[in-house]
Image (cartoon, rainbow, N blue to C red; front, side, top):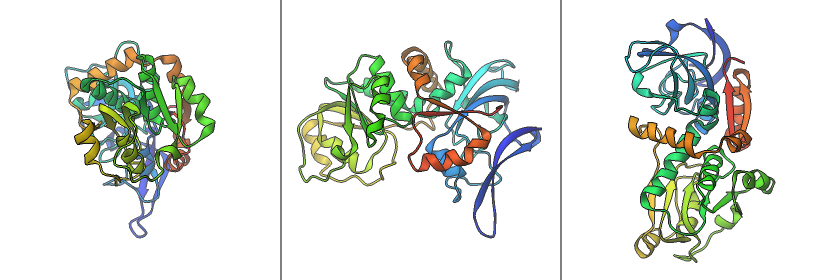
Length: 329
């Protein structure tokens, strides 16, 4: 038997509840690899899965946790042997399939990536899905050719934004970090941001189809009204790597104008169904290009028992940086 955070649903009321309980290996779903989990993280999707409405969960009982890192305990696949360190992000783990908020997980071998040299399991989850997604965004901007000028990072104090800021700064780029909380300035400058942009500055409604060119690139974790405004301010040929929808799915403005008159690229980043080679490339880049001292500054620790409260907090935008869950604490 081992510990797990299990979400149950009351069929009559439709309400869900989450509690730490004990389960066995027989309860786990099928898969070729059994992993002894060391760490998981807390992401926005985890908050939705833990929350009272159930969010993204399809079947109950359910173990949330959309990523994890740990050690292979048993394997029916030749690619992984007991003792191997592995990391998992994506594949709807923690949503459609049981995830990382348990001391053991069983998954298909294709879901896993060997942990790159230079990262331990705690560091891997300090990066987690958010950091993995941030690196995919940076790689997408690089593939298009990053233009001169500051690179804007929206939602910069969140998980994706924090890692994107640190990676871009470490690569030598000038980073402008967007936040709605002035008290986050010291934290963001510590990650390498050279300019702090107030959120209100980019959400103010304007009817101008284009504005002065400001940004050579952008990692956008917010969308909504902010994305519409940012697109109007992109430099010619600049690219926006769009990740999340925290600000809403609707984008206001004459969007066709930046695309036709300035050749702006809008790049959608999907961290869920990435090919294995691209996953491995992203994790190897993370090990190489993300400064570990800055990574540590983003981390706050948590245990399984902390998760219900943290799930609520992240939905309210009250979680800064990366929450690393020690499932054995």
